[in-house]
Image (cartoon, rainbow, N blue to C red; front, side, top):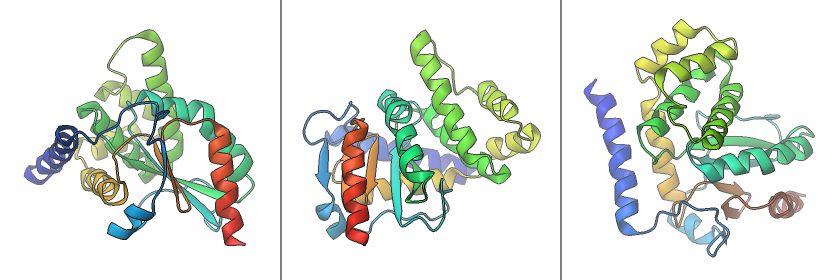
Length: 229
């Protein structure tokens, strides 16, 4: 239990340090620096890696998009609803791109709980179904102006709604089985980003920070694919 608590504490300290330093951007990302080349980030550390994450799409797809998000982030919801569906349709379903979600959970305990829950869903091969359900739940919460979308009871209900074994799921969640992986995602974000922001998407050697329109991502994806030819 001490190690699990320490993991959450480490995430809290990580987020607090960034906030205090004034480098945390929680916005639509529509103002500079909204888009930036990651050359500087790559010099100080390595590029994001798939690691233990569950990729959406063909494993052999030539290009991997790394999406850093917080399930409570309203602009992550905007990206999920307006941009990601087109990326999935035009690039994931055609085998050109695979998507990897990384948890950058800095908006409180509910964010950390959601991150732990979605990682538990991968034990039952339901990661992306649960990922989508979390964002839909957050969207509904934002529209209604309510709270508690990621309460323990609601996280269990999501698991039931997508036909998971809820007993196994809740055992995983209550044990905080994946707390270390949640922390690893946050640590990786700190290494590869020049400024911490959600959503942040790595497309080849381009870093796009913010809920930009699909056209911006399309251009970046096409450029990255062209470089691979």
